[in-house]
Picture 1 (spheres, rainbow, N blue to C red):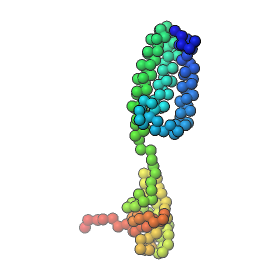
Picture 2 (picture 1 turned 30 degrees about the vertical axis):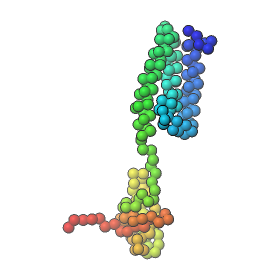
Picture 3 (picture 1 turned 45 degrees about the vertical axis):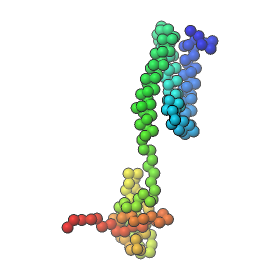
Length: 177
């Protein structure tokens, strides 16, 4: 069977090479097509390119390794690529898209957290605190609430953030008597 003046087995290899190069380019420049598959997921390049690559791979290998007819090899290749692409989409791509990737925080989101003083906070001055979060340990400039001095090593409660300075008060945990 011939298509475009080439046998089917001669057609699989160039398609495989072109689809492989397109997949590599998509890896590097995928941010340009971000959201392309939102309206219709089957048009997402992350779904189409693996399907084409897998079809060409299965077709090329089956043409070389078996004596099956080209039509039967094409049908097997399309079916195998469809199954593998389905598995790739539902078990890898969808979970990755829904995963939380942001480790960003805002200073305002730290209000209400407990921190530790690492540089004493003088009256009418600035010191430094460290806050332990899931993102790691953050070090921030701090000033005492009502300009009260706070010693080194004390635990403090972050009251608010004003122009990058954390306003803190010595932390007194609630205890039942």
